[in-house]
Length: 362
Ligand code: NAI
Ligand code: MG
Image (cartoon, rainbow, N blue to C red):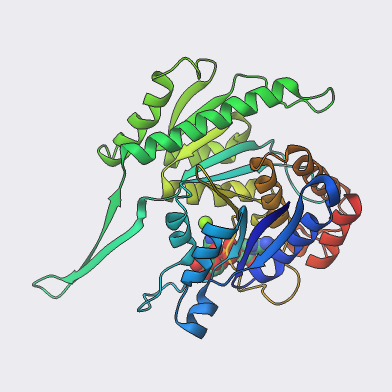
């Protein structure tokens, strides 16, 4: 049997970093079933060419033919364009990929100032909050304008993302206990879930999010060994920048999760390092956290590591834990050695050279 992976490079550097992830998956040989890559269309470029940001055929093939998928990045315009809406937001909805799981961990990289120990997972709700994109604009009698956005929080979506966060905390706790000598985590405390919200101001919406996540722990003994904490989103950012080592798993509504994970990426050196998976109950899609980076596109200097690590996340969630660990070990070795780094990490290497270095380590 083979492993069918839908590949959606979409726009900008997505077209440069997804092939890197593909090369790494191909290099695993018999460690995984033979991967079969199915190229699929989506994105702003596709919209401008054929009028659809997310062709139906892409959704159909993902649903009917693929075991999993990898997404690059889209270039969404910041003004409203008739008929266009972001394909990644739509894909998460179509495939019910309700969780965006973003591990952010630091590796000592030569020449990088990293006094921080950061090894956290941000679990971002992926289907609602302000991202339902219900916005209106109207004109007041005095001619001034008023724009309104609807924010949707449901107990169902908040409970299932809460459950995902507690399950991840449970697994991380077990992995830390099982870590071999010399590879122990510096985190000696119990596993922890931090609920990120702003319910001091948004007491109804964030209040429901907070209560729904809390009810997951309170409803069972399964999570008795996991500590539950809360942090308002603004002070979350502050504490994350001062003492990121205190966080284990953080769970947040869509918008806060989006923002704190870009912030966390700065702590570990670059957005080009941080991977994610969009996960539902039956499907996962890997995706680097970064966007299409128009400032560096087409130069072969985008950091491929976020995409390569996203491929590893996909593998481990499909149950191929060992091959995923091999990929991560190869990536860590390349970073710690520091010879092959892209410019975002202070190096001079190209996307291709960094990928070659990872392949060599593999
Ligand atoms: P961005 O993430 O594309 O770039 C931010 C900064 O990080 C830039 O300086 C960029 O050069 C750098 N960077 C990002 N990834 C990198 C990598 N792999 N290697 C080296 N440097 C990297 O965010 P920005 O500039 O705000 O957005 C650009 C476009 O991307 C927009 O159209 C936005 O809508 C879209 N976007 C798409 C996302 C997605 O596809 N899921 C997520 C975020 C933004
Ligand atoms: Mg983002």
